[in-house]
Image (cartoon, rainbow, N blue to C red):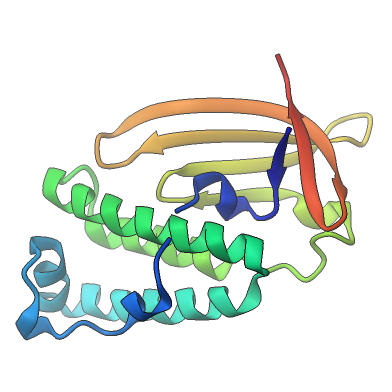
Amino acid sequence: MLRLALAASVFASALPALAQTAPDCGKLTGATDKAICADPQLNDLDKALRQSFSKARARVDSTALKALDKDQKDFLSERALVFENRSMPLKDYMKNRLSFLDGLDNPAWGRDAEAYLGTWRNSLGEVRISKDDTGKLVVAISTLSPAESKWICDIEGSGTPRNGKLEFVEDD
């Protein structure tokens, strides 16, 4: 049984909050970070991402926080690969992340099954939650590698919210 405390926990990863401080562009050595510092649009996006990540960290419980931190670490690693491989525009990749972080909090999660309905995406895939004809929630998770532009895995199942978490059982 897979526990889905937060859509982010599916794609999880551990990054200290300190790593989200603004970089000193003159001291950077990585090509991705240098490119972000050199481009005003990317630099603004990076600032927005740091702010959104800090706000998201403040809104989630300790279980989701671990998942979110791990997810951020994965995002930063994948961001470098996306930049190096030119698999998609870095600006688009960063905007997708910002949208994901801004959509993480829903105060009705755990109290209202309808609040789980929707689609959440991050750098490593997406979680889609819908309701079937019987009223059960259907969860579909797809993972991918944006740096390599390839699909990794799909999983589907159904379940119900219990104790503030959406628990589901994978379909055969």
